Each structure stands twice: as C-alpha cells, then as structure tokens.
Image (cartoon, rainbow over all chains, first blue to last red; front, side):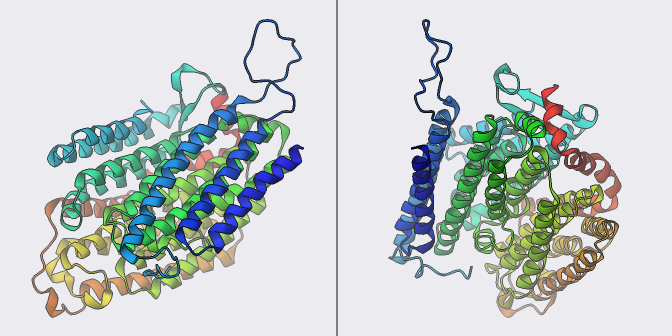
Length: 115
Length: 492
C-alpha cells in the first residue's frame, strides 16, 4: 500500500518535470511546476504516515503502545505551500507581463536573449 | 545579537513599506541599516575568535528541540561579504535607480529583503530554515531581476524562476529524504546522528538531489543557462549582489554546511567539485571571450570564477580550502566592483555594447580607475587580492600532487587576463566615438561606492595575511573540522 502511495508521489514529481521540460506554453510550464510541488508535498506527508497510527495528541486514558504519526512534516507543509503560493504568484505575474509585451505564451517565440 | 542580522533588514524593509513615497527618508534608513549590519558582521569576526561558535536558541528552546541560529567562522565570512556588498549596492543604487527606473522605494524594500534572507541562510542551524531562507532569497532575486519590467528583464526572470524553482524542489526532496532517515531537521543533531550510525542508502540517494539543487543555484556548468541572462539584465547594484553573494550563499554555503558539516566529504564528492569547477572555469572563460556586451561578459566571468572557488575547495586540503574561500571573498569584492563600473558606463552612455563604447578614460576617470583595479584583481596581478587567492590555489594544487590542475589553473588565469584586456580596450582606452562627446562622470555616491570597493580590492591584496588569518582561516577551520560541527553545538 505505502509503496503504491510513494510511487504516486514520485510519479507526480516526474510528471511535473516532464511538463516543465517538454511543454512550450509558459502557463503549462507553470502548471508543471505546481504538479511537481504537489508531488513533493505528498512525499512529505507520506514519510510521516504510519498505518493505524493516531494523531499526536496525548489524552488521559491511552494505552502506552499507541503509535503516533510524526507531526513535523505535516507542520512543514503549510510553510512549503505558502512559499509555493508566493512563487506561483510571482511566476504568473511575470507570465502575464510577458504576454502583454510579446502577445504570446510560447517560450520558443519569447527569445530576445541568447541563453 | 546574532538575530539582528536577519531581523534588522527585515524590519527596515517593513518600515519602508509603511513610509511609502518619502524617498529621502527611506534612503537614509536603508543606508543606516546596511551600514549597521556591515559593521556588526566585522565585529562578529572578533566574537568568534575565542569562542569559535556562538549559538542562539530561538525562544530559549535548547538544541535539538528548538530552532537555532549558529554563528561560526564559515558564517562570518559569508556575513561579511553579503553585508559589505549590500551596503555598497544600497549606496550606489539611489542615483542609478532614479535615472534608469522609477521607484527607488520598492527597489530598496526588495533589496533589504534579499539581504535579510541571505543573512538568514548563512546563520540558520536548521535545514528546513535553510530551505525557507533560500526560497526567500530566491524570490527576492527573481523579482529584482524583473525589476525593469521590460522584455529582456521579464524573459530573464522567468527563465531564472523556472530553473531556480526546480533547483529548490530538488533541495526540498533531499531534505525530505534525510528527514525520513534521521528524524531530525537540526543540522547539529543530524550531523551527530550520522557520525554514529553512518550513511545509509537513503541518505546516499539524497546527496545527488542536494548536489543537483545546489549546482543549479550555483550555475555550475552544465546548469548555468539562467545566469548569463539573469545577471546582466538586472539593475547594476542587483547584478553586483547576485554575482558576488547570492550564487555563493545559496549554493556554496549549502554545500559547505551540509556536505562538509553533516555528511562528511568523500573523495568522490571532492572530485565532483574539483572537475565540475575545472569545467566551469574553462567554459566561463571561453564564453566570456566571445561576448560583445559588457555585463554579459562579466556574468560569464562569474561562472568561471565560481569554478575557481569550487576547484580550490575540491582539492580537499586545508590550503586548498583557504585558497578557495579567499577567492570567494576576493571575487565578491572585485566582481561587485566590476558590475558597478559596468552600471556606471551604462548610466552615462546608455549602452552596454562594446561596439558603441570607447575612450571613456578621458571623460570618466574615477570609473576607469576603479575598473582597472577590478581588472587587476580579476586577472591576478600582484599586489591585488585576486593574485594571492589564485596563487594559494595553485600552490595547494601542487602540494596535493595535482600538477595538471595547477597548470590548467594558471592557463585559465591567462584567459581571464585576455577578456579583461578586451573590456579595457573596447570600453575605456580606444578612440572616443562622436556620439559620446557629451558624457559626464557619474554622481558622487556612485563614485564613492566604486572607489571604496576599489580601495578594498587593493587593501585586501596588500594586507592579505591579516585577512587570511582573521577571516579566512576560521572559515577554513570549519571545513577542516567537518562532521565535528554537530558535537560542537550540542555541547553548548
């Protein structure tokens, strides 16, 4: 089961990377980046996941064998998502400005610089 | 006190947002802030002389429960270059931005965010904080590259954004894998744990992820595609900061901290740094020779010089570390100076193309002399600082029984001499074109920051033993000390 979930997260990352490398439209590249970031988020969620474990809250009548999930990667996720949101906003703003200047989202046509 | 390095620029940036539009006040505030952090970073080099390492526990939680800020020799070296270049860039930017762009206030806010984030990167003792600050610095530099909002700026910025984000994702994935096998995010705790248990195969898998991410951020060849676009199109003070500190703090610092301090270096990793650096040195130098744009040539030269630093560190001997880190310091001084000079010529003449420039030495004496000082340092002519660091790297290569590397390093230095001569001939010493008869020297503040940086280039060259003993040696000691980093902090 967990192997399956991990492979989904890796698949999402690779899908995003494929999208970034292959697609010519700037918007699709940005969607690819978002997919890749979701893959990484899923990976972080999974590394703390345990089958049959509880949320890490200590209550009074609880048996000592209760296993908890690791809360730290879950707590990191909001930070990563907010950074992703900021990056996404900047990227889309740049893309819109580029569209105003060039009239296209095609990366092959946006080529003033030599690379 | 350590937290002021991050907090002060951050608070100043927020105050600048509030006082909107009152430009003179925001200029004064930002100069005071950056001057204070610059002086504080110089004082910090004295703090660590006896104690070697200072740990600040955020909120009083001890390691590894809380989040730490760690100040040691390696951080101090980076703090000094970040805040030094930051101060001169702020000083330089007032006249420059006002003429070429519109909004000085927004520019200063982004610049202060960038400085705060870079200070955070080099001070953080927690791998996730390191990532957050890396992202913050990257976001600030993406928007600073796009600051002009013209065609070229936007295009360079989007390219930088896409590649930079991929790099960040790989760093993040590496961090996730390390966390899953050590169960801690604190660098010191992690280092201690790995020293006891050794490296397992999951950690081995995270190493290439981190290396790939950092190499993308450092623009090591073949991951350099974004740099020659992003650095020249940015406003000149930003190019200076990007070239001389951002690419180093985001990548070399990460490599130094995580690979040396946490995992411990292996001969294979040293070889990757050594040969990756060597390829960068030659690629950057040859590509620079072919350029016709002033700042673009400097950007390729940055690739080449970053390669030099990697080469020095990749030799894996204490002397090699000293050479590499000293070159890092020197590169920060002369490359930022050179970018400021390029900005000054663009400010006066309105162009960066070699074909339209020439003979500026009559009209702009201060800029010419500063750029000459920068060139001498860049090409390694004694007694300027670039000579000593390259000399140390060559000596270290010979000591490490790598004569071939030493010879190649000397050849690369001669190539460097080639492209700096091209700049000097094309821009400053050939015949003055008719169209440039009416140009004037740049305003006082721009001249001041260039001249002071030029004097620093000469001064660190003349007093190189003092710099090496007081700033470079502690940083190199941290690299030599390697994985003992964790136990140093945990015993605090």
